[in-house]
Length: 361
Image 1 (cartoon, rainbow, N blue to C red):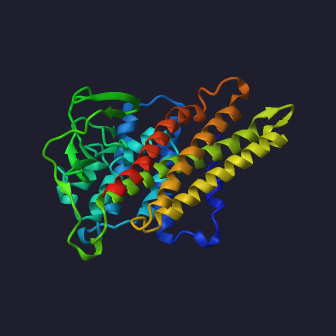
Image 2: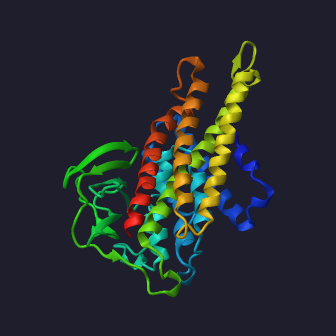
Image 3: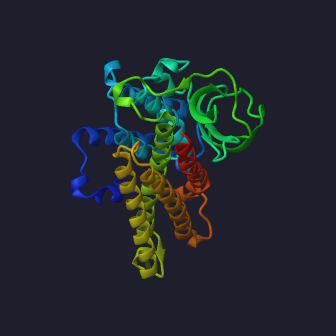
């Protein structure tokens, strides 16, 4: 029932047309997502098939995309990486995140020539299921943090207060989720959201400003929060594009009063609103991701609030659209309804931290 071509992508203004390289990256990721991830929306996960999907995802060479050019990589931009991450959201959102979880941390570390701080220097291992980098999102009062992670005892990038100033650190999380004041909040497939009442302490390298002239005055804390906000927004944007594709296809095939429900004026108006919202999310994301967001935090904050709010509205409207049967179980909106709120919540946590920590940096 899913549409094979995204309607949202077709509405992109001509002046925003992608280059051949950008289009090639997006097409490769989209093809993989449709073949390996989209079918997971309607059936239980087969561990063997998923292991094969993880192996095939690694062949997309996200590691090579992120590596700097001087290290033999592509040095992909934040904008182009967001386009790739969007495509992974064709399937369950938690599976897309599992395959790309380490990307925002790697982008920040690359920016400051700090990839050598990683415990595993083979970047490919962060995309083939060997290990990952957990994402630590601080509370606004720095009393604790929220952690999205996959592997136990994995490295985590987070903000820690040192001498009353926020510092970006790469720490090793405890192996057991119930230690050091940690409380499990939600399990999303192989991912876990945990709430820490205290920031884990211990020896961890502080990520300072590089001596490279191009980095003078650029704040690692700000860079990390921006990269994380763009990452979560890209996941939600991709999911919303897929939601709209599903909604349009579904509204054509489902009959009510002897005609497709899309022929009913109120349904058509609701679909139009959803389409505009998803299209706006995509364009706002691209606009912000393409900017030098070190200079302006306000656009990132506005994007985060807009994406989180609109994603929740679209997910709710889509369930209502499919709920005329009295159920949605077995349809893709049911799977996304359970995960979109968690990723929207994490995005809002990042947004709240932006002003708090940037002001004190």
